[in-house]
Length: 324
Image (cartoon, rainbow, N blue to C red; front, side, top):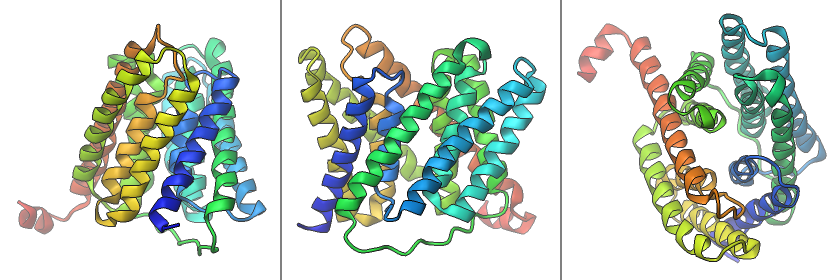
């Protein structure tokens, strides 16, 4: 089996397994488990200690969100600065100390808890804990599939985020949440997670905003095409899982075959996972999917803007003149 085929099969099985579990248990917002399975599927997990760190990062992120909601449940002038600090510096600490998988899980964990319960903490905190189930499901699904498809141990790359990464990540999360409250209050989670993950990946890779937008457009277009046969198939879970895993597996095949454009296809797979995961609900299919597409695009814009603005602000006057 070629490396491209192995990667495609790995991603397809990881997202299918995660989607199947959250679908069986009727977990709210099942896209979260599919997105995380897609994000974690390409990061090897070949030891029990690494799996434990990932699970611990998920719990730590969610409990950090609970702590903010407990300390300042309806005091946004306190909770938002705390959210900014814990999300930014906590995610960067996890990235430096434990690697990208733990950073993703901690960052999305705190966002999934805090953003979900930001408007009505007492009512919606239960949904935040449901999202923790999605995080754990995706973590276990990706780790289980990785045992079969990562044949050789891979050395972990040390992560050295650029100065100011914590500011970019924290600002992207806060700005995404505020923008969602104003523009898309029914999709707080999607917008904030999209803002956070965009800022995180840009700071990890050092740039590539144009590729992010190209990948986002590709993911949205494929999601629109994907929804047509899924909608006509009724409530057939098997058809949905087969189609979902095939498309995300296809994205990973192109990642391996065309490494120069890997950022485009990975972004496309992430947006597709968010927009197309409906675990067939025909009565809500089109409306929910369209709202998530708009929310993911808004988050992409906010995360990219925070990254670019920080880069512009930290350049010296001479560098700004040369760029101009």
